[in-house]
Image 1: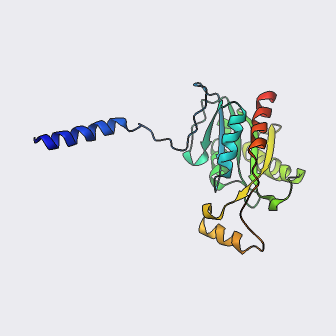
Image 2 (image 1 turned 120 degrees about the horizontal axis):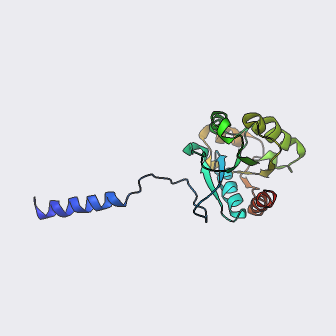
Length: 196
């Protein structure tokens, strides 16, 4: 073997050893090593991801945050918060499917719900709480009577799939906006810790 080939193969082997065994790019690492809390979210454009991270931050970073598209195994978590972005009154199909598929596992772990919606830029009312939680997430999970919160969302055209972007841009006076407030998400995280 030539010296050049030996060095090249050695560098490739060393590089392979540095690669992680399991890539978890979407996973958020909490401040505690033995996390008992998980926050599961479904999102289209990232708004619910930000809300979930900020809720965990309000909980002093004790919750592991998972995108439902990762299909996380939540069996070893004792407490789960579930939430997602809302379109046409429901969360993403991926989140709905996951909740139905894992209903038995999650039934005694769900401690709260959150929803993120544009709500036509109007203040959130009791109607949204009934629609998103009582008539949607509770029906999917069978878990009711837990702490919940609706946050106003945001519209970022560049993060939307082409069909959604065309539909949103065809609405009169529709423009990009951001009404998701970090302070509200942090406060909800603190409320969860205080109530549990």
